[in-house]
Length: 274
Image (cartoon, rainbow, N blue to C red; front, side, top):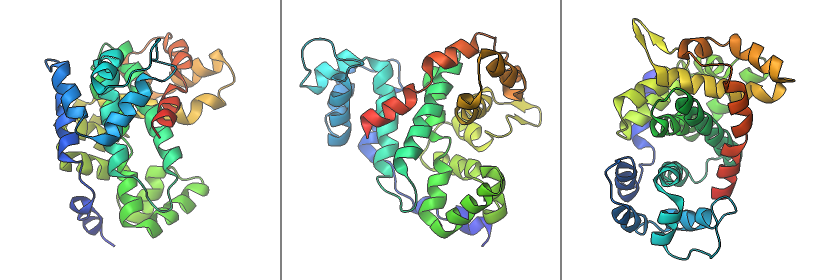
């Protein structure tokens, strides 16, 4: 199997529904009118249901139960609506994949996306772009499981021997999920900066170019994989000091407490939307 044969399947994957793509464009425009957003959300039953469920959740619920999309959008505000629309678009596009625990997959995805947003806030960078990049960072894995489920199982076997996911994918496929994810994001017409960040998430420096967004993705991914194994604040800070992206991004010691404060919020959100 050649890399080209795998990449050729990108166009055969599910497409984000037109109404959802239009909604994503709308919520990511700071000048959008909330009434227009409400009207567009109402055209998609799945997103409408999730908006209502989230607005009445313990996190956002205040007093009376909200029964209309218009009221739910007002209660949630533009930031959470952006998050919800991006997440729903991806979850609706891949409702089921044989051999992959989608609950665990989306839990990890939301957690990394939430941490991307948290780090972007610390850097005064675009939080919405960071969250979206986190939501898309591992979509290449969905391509692998969808097109070549047998190869996906071989990747898992290599990972069990101690290989990283990227190393295992390179051995089995001749490419990795980052490269494939970048192509899929491009196919879905996301911004070039976001496409590049996903494709180069394991190497934020390309020649003379440094991608802050790629570094944010990789550090967020590493935090999700390692944070819970670090015994205390001193161990957490020592671990951060050894992460290249932490230094490259110029983050401060405050990140330890910020991570602890937000740890688990992404998985909670994924559970509420399932």
